[in-house]
Every structure is written in C-alpha cells, then in structure tokens.
Image (cartoon, helix red, strand yellow):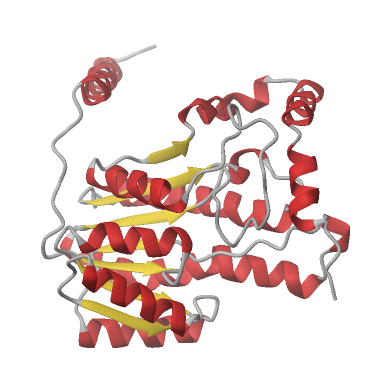
Length: 307
C-alpha cells in the first residue's frame, strides 16, 4: 500500500517532470540567451587542422583565451597565427600527444601554471584507419582507442577536478554518428566514439547527482566531415547523408556550447537513430545499403596506393 510519504514523492516527481518538459519546450521555441566567452580559457585538442582549427578561429572572435594541443607542431602554430589574426589576444600552442596519459598530465600542469584553469575543454583529437575489422592489427585497434577515447579520459581527469571545485565549466566531446549506429570499415573508430558517448552521458549524470550542475556537457555527433580523417569520401546520397565542411561543424559546436546544448547531432534528422533498437536489423541494413555508404568508404579507404 502507498503511504502518505510515497504519494508525496510521486507528486514531487510528476511536478518536476512537467516542469522540465515545459522548460525544454520553451527553450526549443524561445532559445535562451547565448552566454559570452570573455575570460574563459578554452582548451582544444586536435587543433592543428580540420574542425579543431575552425573551433579555435570561432572562439578567437569571442574574447576567449585559447590553449591549443596537437602533435602537429607546424599545423598548430599556423592555427595559433590564424587565431591571432582573427582577434584572439591570448593563444598558447603546446605539443601534446593526448593518447599518452603521462604527457597529458604533464602538459595540463604546464597549462595551469602558464595560462590558468581551463573552463571549457573541447576534446576533438581523433583518427580513423578505414579498415575492416579482420584487417586491423591489434596495435592499431589499441591506438585508435587511445587517441579517440582514452585521450578524453585523461583530459577530463586532468581538468575536471578544478571545475568541480568551482562548480563551473563545460566538457565538450566530438563523437560521431558512428557512435550511435556503427560505420562500415571503421569498427575501431565506432567503438571509440560509442565509448565517448557512454562516458559523457554517465559523467553528466554523476555531476548532476553530485550537485555540480554548473558544469555543462555537450556531446557532438556529426555525420561525415570533409577533413583529413575521411580522405576522398563522397556521399552517394548527399541529401540524406551529407558531408559537412569543418567550418560549418565548428560554428554549430560553438553555438551548442553557448546554448548549453547536451546533444549536437548533425544532421538533426539523424536523431531518429535513438530509436534504432525498434527497427528490425534487416531493414536498417537495407537502408544503409540504399545510402551506399559502403561504396563511399571503399572508395575513400580501399584504393590501392600509387607507388
């Protein structure tokens, strides 16, 4: 039997449920005011090119201090130069192999000493090999997981404690649509992106339960992006499976951070992937075959190298 206390708990739950529903509805109809970034310290991994560079250039115009991490020193210096040309007053470029735990912690200490406490962490570094599961050597599979996923574990562990102390900060992780569905010729990449989504969802839950609601989380899941990762990929059905330019994705990421958006899925129509377990697997495979994604992946990664 329900006692009075149980009834009160149910009523309290229903009240919050209704409140959060209408809060989300109002936010959808009337987006909240975008926050500013003056005084924020933004660290971007994988900043030497592609989406990482474009994110840096977007933030350069918003009065934020930029910290750039990459193993490509030449490309990273170019990003630093371009950011300064675009208005950034303080830009710091560091060589950092984010897949190396010791190096991440060492460089994190250096950033805290030379720049200050990171308030917005954008984990963007990543690789994709484009091989079928049975063709991926063990060491390459491990490398993909270290670069794409474990790097984000190390950076979050390095910078989250200070955010928790002040109950202020923002964790941003570039995952992928592949993390929601799987990607032909990319079992290692898919595994790493699925792990990112799962970790960030859980971390957000833990922060919420710990009362650290001043720390926001944004999980980015774009479709194919025209960058060095997917070299030569050309969509066979651009209307349903578009290929985005890095600048466009970067602008959407910055906007999502401003609006404190939890998921950023590009294109938005692919939100339906959240219901994939309700779709019979044969029908899902038929849809993917009609999109001819395997053909595009074979053309991008299955070409014989010219000697």
